Image 1 (cartoon, rainbow, N blue to C red):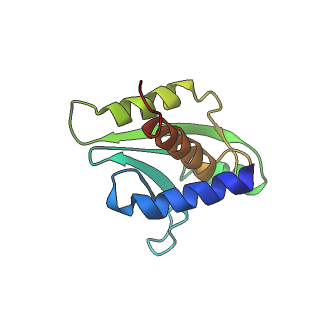
Image 2 (image 1 turned 90 degrees about the horizontal axis):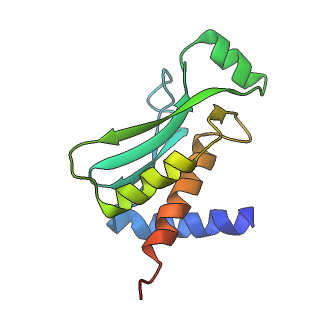
Length: 130
């Protein structure tokens, strides 16, 4: 299922280049600008979310992550203006229900968070209302 989810998300990402919902690469916090390994979810023109280590630039955080240990993480919401769109509200509902806030390089990272958030919002967009 993980492989098929990845394929669907990547197809969705390619299709969504003309729409607001997309994944966007960015440099790691404190990392070189040319090394875009971090990902965030752009939900609409005013709202985006990402998942990062709480103390991203701390040497202790880096050491723990490189030793494949979990560190406290935080979900960041970037909002340009109000009111919030229906799509952004669905994204926020997902974020509110996202209980694992410990970041781990393999099991729970910016990519796993972004793919699940993208999938949730994308699936909600495709639900037909009777």
